[in-house]
Amino acid sequence: MEIWMIGVAVVAVGIVLLGIWRRRTNEKRASRRAHEAAREREPPVELGETYEFGIAEFTDHHSGDRVAVGKVEGFVLFTEDVPGDLEEGDVIRATVLSFNRGRTSADATYAGR
Image (cartoon, rainbow, N blue to C red; front, side, top):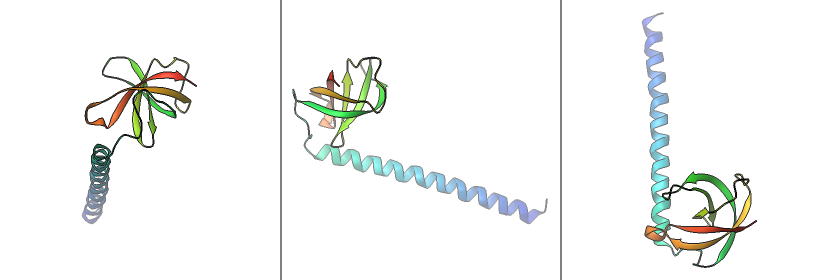
């Protein structure tokens, strides 16, 4: 392989790596901006009220239990006591129990489908 081909390959790899780094940096910035905006607004949910939303994912909450994660008007709800037969994309109802620190998300309990 000629030396100029090696040089071109090195430059190409460098450009790809730079693109990946910039994309990740932009994603982090966007996430940080969204988090800051969430901290500045009033939550669109109220304690004791029940809301309907689609399950975006399941995760292990700080309690150690498996919880469903969903959003109401962009506001994250961590929902406990979800039946094991539910899947991502299923629509459920949940009652808001408490707000988490900073009021950027809330804990809820499953209230049905």
